[in-house]
Image (cartoon, rainbow, N blue to C red; front, side, top):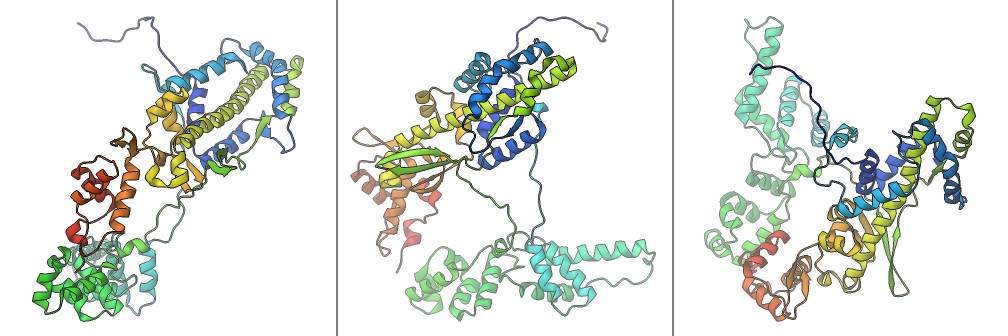
Length: 498
């Protein structure tokens, strides 16, 4: 068959989501600070939106009253293309999406792919390399040494360790010298290449910088540098230098026999080593500043837990009165002006409706969480109940994906502290009386048991299983070991004190 291009007509049905519903979906997903920026952006691009004054209690009533007066503009502009400004159609679409999810099976995503996504703009920060270069500039070094020092700084990772060997650093700086000589036409004369002794001496200079332990090649060297800087006695340094494997394995009796001290002295020296920082570079490494503003506030008033939306800093939007007056004067508008007014008016009213729908949806989800987790607010984390997104969705009549978006990256200020909404969701285990207990609550119980144990006779995983079963919690030993690892708690042998 001959290859070529052809045209054909095909009739079919396809599910599509209105782009405004994608906007509503994004608004539901946004935490408070992102939503605030989004609304400020909408104020700039849509002239039909303006900030409502705090005293305008009748703003919503005015918008409803004037909706009927301005609906004719949309119809006159292009009734086949524009959405209705307000009415049951948009409300039905919104309710359907909340109940069935924003991505029904078979729906296309061209609209989502075409939307613009804005990344946060990075700002200049003072990182570990800057911190080291500032110290190097204060040293009495020659230009040749400064160049080598800068090569060392470039080979230090965020954790403070050298990411290249001394040979690689020497070869790298010498390669740079050779390339510079070739550009200047001096490759036929003897080059001032760096020697091994220069690289070794510069390593000593770099390792004397702050924070202590910087420029180490491995963990043992990093700990030795910190011990030297702190002026500890000889025993901790000797354990790290000569008995590092036994130190990691907590073999106190073996260390005491080889060193000639008591096991208690060996363990005391190990305690001094444990206080050191295994990744000293992290003290100066720059990271993103994450500011958390609670989206919700939970307060106990007169014995009841009440939920409030923390939207006091959100711009209060309303339809611009001046532009609504302009929209009423239809006789002075041409077709293009009517189309522009209709599109902007539709977008403004849809945005105001979406903000209110977001508010009601978030409140509905949080009210259920507070009612379900009342024992947690009253008694503590051990009484946190297991909860899943599916359970919330089925109870409040929404899709699971909607609940997931509501709880994503959102925080609540509660009597138990600032908590992410995802904190309240966890799997559960059954008790002997048929009730369920949260996995997060079990972890808190394990942590408490370990904190109160006899350090000379620490609890084994099987002993923790027995204590939990005494409280009616059925759990396997391997599950206890898994939870213990997640909490960063060592095994019983490693926790034992002599």
